[in-house]
Image 1 (cartoon, rainbow, N blue to C red):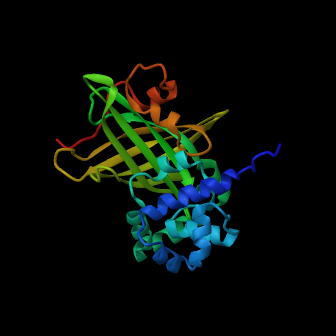
Image 2 (cartoon, helix red, strand yellow):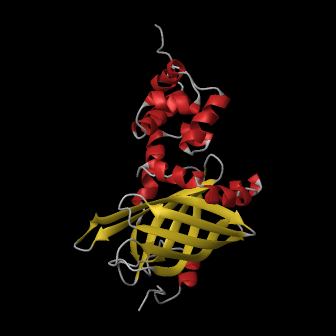
Length: 277
C-alpha cells in the first residue's frame, strides 16, 4: 500500500499568498517584467510546483513591500494582514523622494531592536465613539521589505446587540524606532477616512512587555473630529494576526477584568480624549 506524497506547507502557503497579491495587482506579465522573473517560472510559483530561490523570493517580496518571511505565512494570517488593498498606496508613499530620504535615516536601526518589537499586541485606548469605554484592538508589527510595518484592526459592537459588529476599521503603516522611542504613522484602509500618528516608550518588566504612549487621529470628514489620547500596547506573542486575535477586538467597560491593571493605571480613571472644542 503506497502512501500519498506529502505536500510542503511552505510551498502551498507561498503559492496561495502570491495568488492573493497578484489578484490585486492586475497583469501577471506586467508583474513579471517589473520584478525581472521569467513568466514561465513565475507560473510555477503560482501553481505551487516550485519554491523560489532566496534571490527570487526577496525580489518578489520587495516588489509587494513585504518581508520574505511574511510571504510564507499561513494564508489565513496573511489575509488578516493585508486585507484592505493598502499595498498600492503604501508603496507609492515609500517611493516618494521625501519619504525615501527620511526612511534612509530611520532604517539605520540595529536588527536586534527591530526583532524586539515584532509580534502581536493588544492595543488599548479610550474610545472616541463610545464614551467611557476602552477600545481593545489587535495590532501586529512585522518586517517589511526594508522597514518595520504594522497593521491593526478595531471593531465596535452594535449597542443593541453586542454580539454583532457595528463598525470595523483597519489601519496599515510604518513603525520607526528612533532614539529609544517608537513612532508610528498609518492610514485606515477600509473606510479610507483617517490617519493616525503615535509615539511610544517601551516598558520591559520581567516577562511583561508593554509600550505606553500617545496617539492622534485626523479624520477625513467633519463628523469625526481630530483627537488625541493615551494608548497602551501589550505584547501577547510572536507571529502574525489570526482569527483568535481578531475575536478579542471590542469596546470594553473600563473595569473589564481582561484589561491589564497596568493599562488601566496608565489610561487613568477618566477618559482623556483631547478633542477640539
